[in-house]
Image (cartoon, rainbow, N blue to C red; front, side):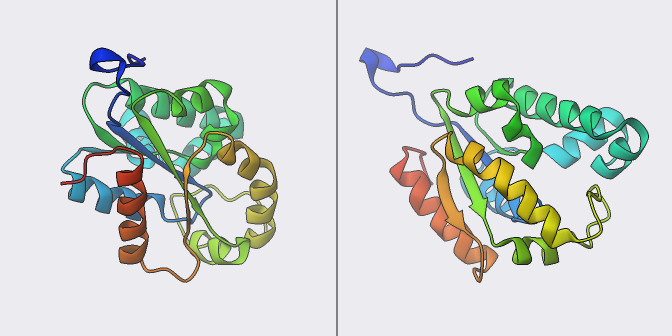
Length: 188
């Protein structure tokens, strides 16, 4: 996907920031703010699915099943990472379960941001989203179960880790910008 070194073997500057986390963690909110601040295009999984299929994630799952949704979400991430130029990419939570997606998240030039929150906080945030699939009657149980499976996978890609509990979107953005500077992302 990318050249591992820059001029003279220097590390390649990060040109892709992937915002990831469980449903309700604030991926799209942070992604929009980061894209605006960096002056980079935003590639959001939910929007990519709507453009490519004409359906929301919830509609894809209802019509074709969870596996088809997760395949489409992984394809959207890999496609976004494969496009030329810098970008802020909001990845669906399910993509972390796909080995090709995890490998792509560790490529040179890619920095992943993992937004983390307590299951109760995330459940309150995603329970009312009409575009999100419904995976069970109790959103907190769903968030807890997904965290148990996905948190170790998120951690494995050496992401910037940001807790969202009790933080405003502005505070999350400032934390992200600070950590991205540390990872070599040029911040205007």
